[in-house]
Length: 155
Image 1 (cartoon, rainbow, N blue to C red):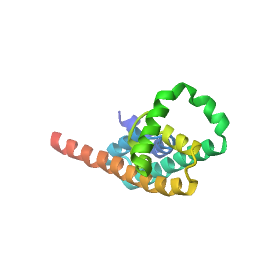
Image 2 (cartoon, rainbow, N blue to C red):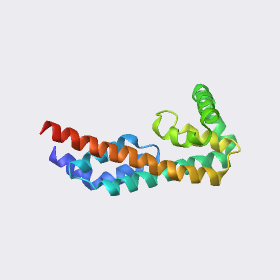
Image 3 (cartoon, rainbow, N blue to C red):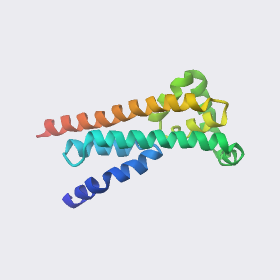
Image 4 (cartoon, one colour):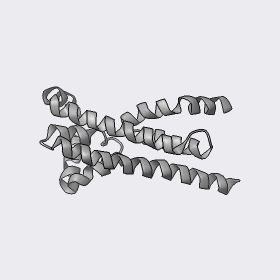
């Protein structure tokens, strides 16, 4: 078990960056737990995950906006998710950028759908920047403090 934890501590930031590029809530929660165990640094974990998450959503938006015809081919199978995402965007507007970070199965579609619409790229990048920071702090610090509390409770 110690060897696995040491490997996670050694390669954890790389794994966290790659996984956070496409979402990464579980990886960031795991990094928070490993940070509470003293195997990783919580500040570095949050910075890595936040940066990768921001870049991932920005790239999805940009790809959808610049390649609309090609992207539409892949979305035909996901009509229900697209309809639900459109409803989320209509109901909550700009807050959808913040909300989508926490909903599995939708967090990839919101930047794509917004990219396919006429949503302004600069506005999305601005909102996504702050949404990524909030996401990183909530998930990272939440898992860090919760796991530290659980560890103290069982000790």
